[in-house]
Image (tube, rainbow, N blue to C red; front, side):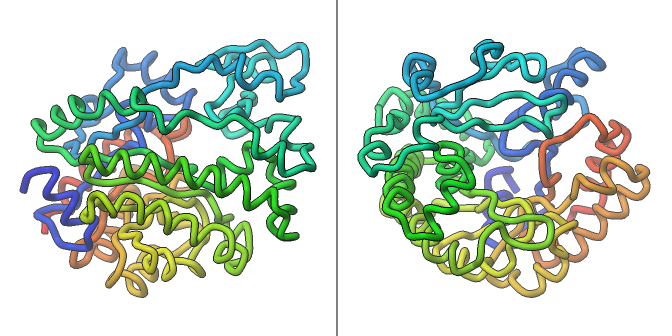
Length: 378
């Protein structure tokens, strides 16, 4: 099968010629490695191409919006009250607690001593806002501007020539963006008390996300990746009822906007952690594949048994145990197990459940790729 056909067959729940797999997480190339792991990879190998280095047979290419032309400092710095010792660094924050960057939604990203300790700082004026007018007037990205999508025709033509599937990145679709702007505790309080500020902010973000999805679908992308982290290690970040009230109908609007112009576009949903209580409802609103299916939080074989008749699965190789701390033999055994259970009958896109961290030995990544190629044939 051609790579594109293989991916689309798999994500629609079918059985392709082999299990598609990769090492990346929502990105091309070194985007699948965290900041420190990417630096070390370049230093150790002299390469910027993990696929080539580890021998990955790549089936997908990720597509993104064109970068904004807004001056983010001019646009968002007036909303912040950041410590004077922090220096602005637009793309690559440096040493922990000394620099920050601004994200397109206006939150500041301040690096920690380790990538795992990076943290978001919401715009102080919005985190403290009491009036609906303040939320309504906060500037959001220009996702409705034509120039953000002008590159897609040429980029998608190249991807089709390569016979790969195109995947549009739209993670942090609604909830994560909202709490980065409002602050996590304040947004959750607004939602739980039914405050108008929550509905206003979520609706504004949803409208822009629906526009992005519609424009990606109209350009002809094969797959759209949406999602928000709503799970912790053993429970959800919020009750299923809260998710059902505030997020489910808004996610449905995003999906419906894309399907109105491209009915066959595939949607997969990302959330780390335990989210089983809402899995059936994700399928109900049009999600066809679930990512990343963390084995430390939900048993992949059980989830496949319960929901494999309506969902495919992208991920399933955890980064808390075997990949960073196991032997190559243990990695190969886990790959084989995933293919025999989650991959039974199709519907598995095998991948690590998050970006590669420095703790993962390269021997284990080679073992993952070799095992996927050895055991992944149907």
